[in-house]
Length: 174
Image 1 (cartoon, rainbow, N blue to C red):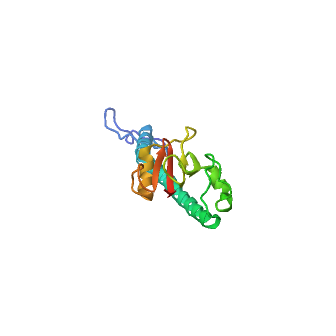
Image 2: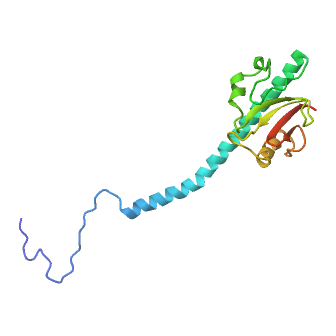
């Protein structure tokens, strides 16, 4: 059907402009979504990081407590404390009481497991973690958070303490 002169607007007359919108998004809409996602990520990611840190600390405390109970059982059954083994090396005979792979993997917070016997730090027996510069290293502030769960929150005193630089132990016997 052809348009008649009465169907078309007169010159200079206002005519509504019809545009057909396609199914895509405009650049501005996409940028708004990206900004919103960025803001949400900035809020959520630190919370996940903090949750991960808390999980590592909790796993460390749980494993340390298991090792302490096992060392006490070792003492009852063998009549003596664990030997002073090299850092990262499971004490002789202790593999019958704990999973040797768990000992070898090291703590979830980094460092290496260690046992002490008649240590110069003033303890008769203890199990702890040594940060020797390889891998993750933790400071007194970080370890004080762990100490607050185990003991008194002070790494210089109590049942969980620093016996030397980078060496934090649960004291089994003074």
